[in-house]
Length: 174
Image (cartoon, helix red, strand yellow):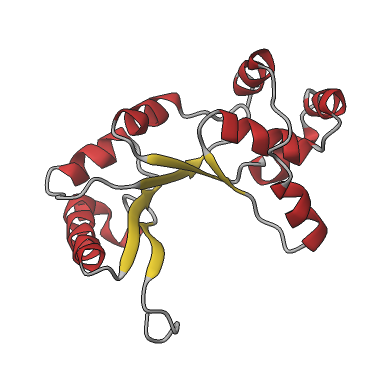
């Protein structure tokens, strides 16, 4: 943190539950990493600690030794990719779901169902996807370096998708 010039971090994540170099002992490695995260959290050096790409079996293994429940699980979520089992598991434990690639790494723009829906709400396809994510209870993490798109991606709070459209987007084929 010193090299970054920060006194604390807002969020720190274990990126993957089973990195290739530790595939044979991922549970042990995660437990050790998590213990260090907990110490940094308790010392107020990190405000939130979490995981990324953890499925229920990975979380169960982590929770065998954890003192603090992960606050965030950052997983791939976008229309058609809902990871229902992991979402339900996290919700039951009050773990915030962050949706990385909420635009499906651009794949949603090619889905034929998206343009008519965007027209119906007079929004962009990206706004429809990001609003869907919010209504699903996910925190979307869109990526853009374009200032116009960044502003556009933030303009999500003056409209709502119907329950039918939210369900239809969730059920899209991947």
